[in-house]
Structures are given as structure tokens and as C-alpha cells.
Length: 255
Image 1 (cartoon, one colour):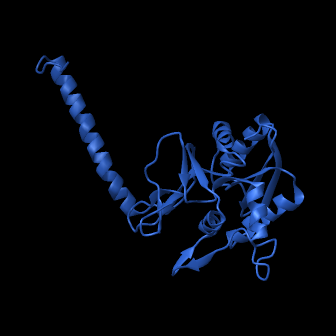
Image 2 (image 1 turned 180 degrees about the vertical axis):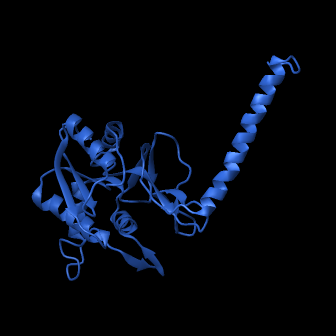
Image 3 (image 1 turned 180 degrees about the horizontal axis):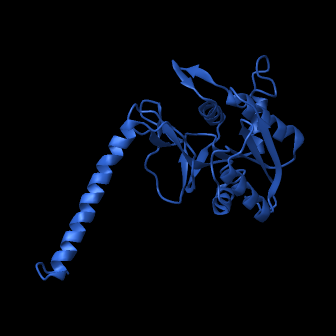
């Protein structure tokens, strides 16, 4: 990214920010001269509505070159911010995502952590990339919108290809809808649309963002943890017994 280019940060929230997220935003604002505007919209319900409004505000109220969309239940460090903008290029890589992990319900004790970057499989379905090279820029086919940096020209082209009857200038960026009998969220819809327009998408695997999740703790969690606790206590007891035997000269310490 050209260091003269400016970046708007776009945030959707239910009306409150997590303190750690706010701190990370302040750290970036204090240290990075490329920051332009901050767009923060509040609301509840369909998140795609807010995301569309953020993009429309970015296009109509700012002249900045890039929009960084980031959710308020995450933390992005200054180092991660630098890596993300270093990977971005308006011609070669106009769309770059960080790695945010979703928590998918598996009906087991714990949710499954799933990286929200995807590749198309042989059956044309989208599959999460559970394996990827460390601290590298990789091409992807879809990404979540938890932390994604997008050049202005992408949104402008989306407006050019809008459904004028139904979408207009405001609602042509994100949409929730069924595709092939499966419900598709606004992030996957965006990815499908920009890929169809000829854009490539990338992720920087070195930009790993902690994602705050919450769930109900139950007896099943306690029972599962008890297995770990029992094994840990047994191991500690064995260490004590071995240490005592060595000190008494019963057993020679292994070298």
C-alpha cells in the first residue's frame, strides 16, 4: 500500500465496544498516520443492513482510499495493522483479510474454532482453511467480515453492477440470502459477488485476531475438565514420588 493512501475504519456494533477492542483502536490511532475517518454505526438485528450503511457512508462522506471493516469483539494490534496494510495493494491485492476464528456449534462440549477464510472444494462448496502457511499472504475464495481491508474501487465497481430496481446505491454490497438451498451470510455473499466481478481475495495468516466468544458453562464442561485435572494431579504426584526416590538414593536420576 502506498503510504500516502488513507484508511477509514468502519465499525458495526450493538451500541457498545469491548474495552480491549477500544484500546486497540486507540493504540492504532495514536501511532498510524494513514488513518482517515472512523465510521461507527449502531443497531441490532440484520448485520448486513449496517454493513451496507457503513460502505455507503464511506463512499459518500469520505475521500479515503481504503475501508477496514472490523468487529468490536476482536483485538487488532498495531503490528497486525501494519502487516495488513503492507499486504494490501489497490491493483494486486485490493481485498485482504485477517484471520478471525468463529465458534461453530458441534453439539459437543466445546464449540469448534473455525478460521473464517475459505477455499472452494472440488464439489464447488466453500471449506474453511484449517491449514495454511505461517505469517504469509495466501489467496482465498471467501472470508468473513470480522477484519477485512477493501479498496474503494471495489465498492465503486459493485455500485456499477448493482440491481438498480431492488438494491440501488445503498444495498448493493452485502446481503443475506439462500443460495443452492443453503443460507448464505452477508460475508460469503460479498465474496461470491466480488469474485464474479474478477477480483482476487487474499488473507494474511500473520494477522491473527483474538475473537471474544461466550457460552454457558455446564456440568459437562466440569466433567470434561475433571479428566484433565485428574491426569495433571497424577502427573504431579508421580513427579513428587520420583524426586523423593532420587533424594533417598532409591532411583538414579535419568540423564
